[in-house]
Length: 313
Picture 1: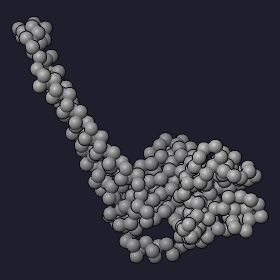
Picture 2: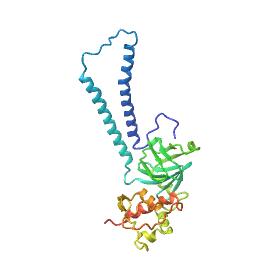
Picture 3: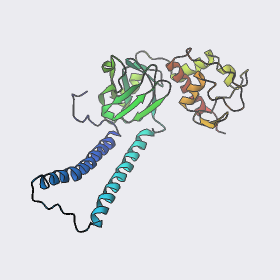
Picture 4: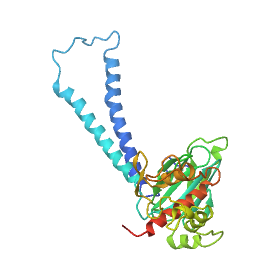
């Protein structure tokens, strides 16, 4: 990790886009500053008290000037808005084949787990040239996952999931910060992102304390918590089947359809009465206080893979 620089190095595919957009914003802001400030200084000097400048109103106005200072700034502003929107949507839409890493923030550390089961604290190891998507939540207060070299920053909020993605383009170590004040030791909630060559990354995944994969952990929890007794094909209680629902719209009572994403599944486990599946009774107990954020993420990963493996209708 390098010493402080005015602009951190560009180490992700989106960093250049963000930097150029920043330069564009500065240029347009400077343009507006000049066309307002320079005439202001000129008129302040020319029409100061005691000057002999004429203060008579002009004989007539100029339609060209009126149109120019309205149309040109409007076109520039709309162009900048469109540019910013294009960058925003690109940075928000992660590639379908992105590596998934789950992140749980707490005062004052980052807990991360890879799909293969490898866990980290305040460190994130990722391969160069591969898109990585983080699925994040907090177990206490609002945090913010910020990697300056990637130009990536996203709030991490308790009670819900947020995500961000990046594609590293340079091997090396980069600073990781919490960019949202989260308590007395906020300044110590720091870490590093290590970008490795793909072969080196694969070796790293298999050494040290390697847990079972998140899918396998989720499968075990699904059985231990009794979920399989109701939500699988052989369930003893009439409950909605969970195979094949992840990412799909599901009918709920009174509200039409809801996409079965990470947030919907989390809420269904902790607040089962909030959105009851259409055609079913409210029989499921809440698991709030009986399951950790890490366990929730493992269950969701299992259901996601279960849906990916389910046969298409």
